[in-house]
Amino acid sequence: MAERENRRGQRREREEAAPEFADRLVAINRVSKTVKGGKRFGFAALVVVGDQKGRVGFGKGKAKEVPEAIRKATEQAKRNMIRIPLKEGRTLHHDVEGRHGAGKVVMRTAAEGTGIIAGGPMRAVFEMLGIKDVVSKSIGSQNPYNMIRATLDGLKKEASPRSVAQRRGKKVAEILGAKAEADADAA
Figure 1 (cartoon, rainbow, N blue to C red):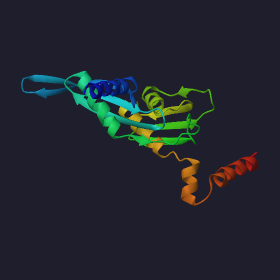
Figure 2 (figure 1 turned 180 degrees about the horizontal axis):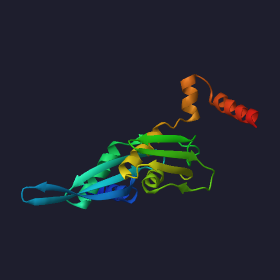
Figure 3 (figure 1 turned 60 degrees about the horizontal axis):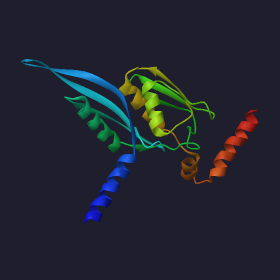
């Protein structure tokens, strides 16, 4: 019996020591509801969660207290995770645009050592995703909710050579070879 409890304790410590997902708080907003007796204040939190290996999600949470709002947002983010293919585990396969509402973002692949060149909410998404080199620009809406949604919209359009080859019924070398030949012809 004591061994089983000890094992449980070790497992719990291991889970606490190495969390599965990293999370980043992007925005906290104080919101109010007007009621008969005055105003009731609450908090809305926006959180981005990722495993830094190609999975990312975002969530919103509202509650009377900040920690509770963050907890709710984190849980929602973990439920809404998507997988994005990364080139060499550090950058995007190709340049891509994303839109949501009035927000538009442009994301470009970058050479090794470039780093993450991006604004606040976009930077949080890239860091949680595990991207190390990217150049991006947000155009239009500066609302963090719209910027994150536009970023994820663009990332969903990301296609790896493997997925393109599979869709076309070809080999990866044929897909990459065709691109290399086109580059040579253009030069």
